[in-house]
Structure formats: structure tokens, C-alpha cells
Amino acid sequence: MSFLVLTFVLISCSSISYLLCRNRVLYKIKLSESKPKSLPKYYGQHAVIWSFFPAFILLLAFTTATPKLLDSLYSQSIFEIYPESSPAQIQLILSKVKNIVRGAVLSDDPLINGIANDFASSTKNFKIIKSLSIVLLSVLCSIIFIRRVNLSTNARDSVETFMRVGFLTAAVIAILTTIAIIASLSFEAVRFFSLYNFFDFIFGLHWAPNIAIREDQVAAKGSFGMIPVLLGTIVVATIAMFVALPIGLFSAIYLSEFASKRVRDIIKPILEILAGIPTVVYGYFAALTAAPFFRDLGAGLGVSVSSESALAAGCVMGIMIIPFISSLSDDVIRSVPQSLRDGSLGLGATRAETITKVILPAALPGLVGAFLLAVSRAIGETMIVVMAAGLSAKLTVNPLETVTTVTVQIVSLLTGDTEFDDIKTLSAFGLGLALFTFTLLLNVLALTISRRLAERYD
Image (cartoon, rainbow, N blue to C red; front, side, top):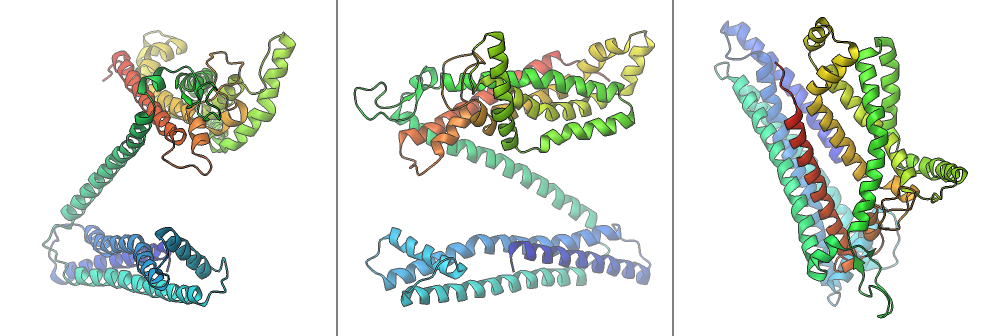
């Protein structure tokens, strides 16, 4: 059985364990007429814990270890049959064996066909063992717990302790994942900086990652100045925020303070539809509609506008992130206590004065959070910039010219058959680390400003 099927089986077994354990507790209460330390549902939840999680951990262990174990065993078998093969050739034969098992390819070699038959048989046996072991463990744990359930034990405390440990584990996993991402990014970035000067990267004004063919060419060893790429990112994100912030914030104020329930129920879902549109669709819209529109508009005004410009990419990106600001700002504004509105209006303030002097200051920390989420979304966008702003890194703040962003360059550097010991490929990790640092500083600055400007309300 597959991972999803086994998970569904475990959920079913756990549900049955919950019902059986709860009914057994109710029967014991009726039989002994004694008061249990916890409600029957907590005993059932405790049974679910014992029925599901040990078996699920075993399922994860089988799912992770089985492919590696099979690869190790059959790599050794292939080496015994082909003793002169290199490790790369063994892996190639093993991949061919797997493709034969999947039915993707055919082979005339009887030895490889024999290995494929053995591999298929072993895989089937491992699946049977995995399925039986997991189901038996779940059933066994359920039977043991249900038979030993005791009304004098406090099942509620056990369930609460398990939930607390589970939440702590989730938090630790999130922290460790963040640390692992930073560590892996930093490790590759250090390799890049060992090949290219750090200060030339940070303060360089020319970005040309393609290694030159002739020694007499400019930047014959490649030029990796970050400033043009980072400047393009800032220009596009700034244009996007100039479009998204006023529209999103004003629409949120209207929906939360002025719109009737009927109007709100119609407008808000329509706005949130924008968040569900794939970015490639926005990219097509930017390339086929927005960019020609701005180019023709500039021609009519006598201004030269590039066919791929930061203005087109930024405006379409701003439209894309409107629902992020609008939806979050609406929730934040609606969470401001009604007593503040009533007190302001009772003192003679107008609706506009109440919004600007009471509601928005009270909602400022949440609004800053919505703004940061939108900025992060704009900085991390790739497809719209590729299709509407281009790949050329120019040292310019002119929104009418072609620019590129950090994320676009990372994608272009890591696309194709590239090796991770090449300076061109490693430069993507330098850009990634720089973007991470820039975003972190932006978040710290915004949080500091919001804390200083935020007002405290009882």
C-alpha cells in the first residue's frame, strides 16, 4: 500500500480506537458507578495517540529507509555481476533496473532483466512487510491501551502533555529548518566568496555572470557586481507597492468601515480571486497587455518606453499583491475594538477623523505586518519579471527601462546542466544570501518603526 493509503488506514484504526475506548470507559462508569478522573472523550483521545503516532512514525521510517536499503543491496549485487564497473556506471545500471521495473524501458540483457525481476520482487515484499507491520502495530497498541484503560488515571493531563510536546516539536522543527536553510545557503555562499572578492560582489556595479571567451574581453573571469540586480529588485518592488498599498489599504477601509454586509460579501471574494491566479497568467498579462500599453502610451507622450520595462512588471505585480494587503488589512481594521470608534464619534469626530486618528493608529502593527508580507511577495516574484522586465541587469532607477531582479538571476543561474563547483552557479547562492540579509534588515526596520509609532489601547 502507498503512503497515503496507509495513512488513511491508520486514521481509520485510530477512529475505531477512539470509539471503542470511549465506549469502554462509559461501560466501566455505568458498571462501577465511580467518577473517572477525566471525561470519556479524553480517554478516547489518548487511545488515538497510542493507535496512530507509533505506527505513523514506523511508516515514516519505512518510507525513508526502504529505498536507500534497496539501492544499497542492489548496488552491491550489480557490482558483483559487473565487478569492473565504476560507481557512476553502477548507479546508471540501477536507474535502468528501476525504469524496467516501472515499465518505462525494455532491455535485451538477461542479467539486467534478472536483477530487475529480483528488484521488483524485493520491492513487493518490502511493501507487504511495511503494511503488515504498521497495521499490526496500530492494532496492537490500541488493544493494549483499551484493555488497560483505568478510570483513576488522568487522561486529560496525558493528552494535554502530548499536545504541548507536539507543539514544541513543531516549533523546534520550524526553527531547525530555518537554521538548515541559512546554513546551506551560507556554506555555498562562502564557497563563492572564496572564488570572488566579497567587496567586489557587494559594491560591484556590473553584473555579467557569463564567463568571457577571450582574455581581452571585459570581465574575462566574469563580473558579479550585485548592485544592478539588487537595484532592479528594489525598483520593481517599489513600483508594485505604490500600486498595491493605496488600493489595498483603501479597499480594506471601505470594506470594514463603509460597505454594507451585502456589498462586502460580494466585493471581498472578488478581490481575493486575484490571489488565486497563477503568476504565469500575470506574466502573460504583463507581457501581452501591460508592456505594449505603457510603450504605446509613452510613444504618444513622446517618451521612450522599453518593450520590457520595470514599470509594466511593477504595475502588474502590484495588482497581484493587492489581495494580500486588502484581506489582511481588512481583518486587522475589523479587529480594532468598537468602543474606540464609539468613543471617537461620541466626542464629535467625523468618520474620516476616526479612521485616520484612531482606527489606523490602533491597527498600525497589523498593517505593517500586511505590508511586510506584500513586500516579501513582491521581492520574491520571478515569473512576471522574466516575462515583462527582461533579464538584462542595468544600473538604473528609470522604471521605463529593462531591469532584472535577484530571483530572476538566481533562476537563470541554476537552470540547465550546471555544476555546483562553478563560480557562475555559486554566484546564485551569493545573491540568495544577500537577498535574505536585505529582507531580514527590512523586517527589523519595519518592526522597529511600528513599535515606536504604535499606540497602546486598553
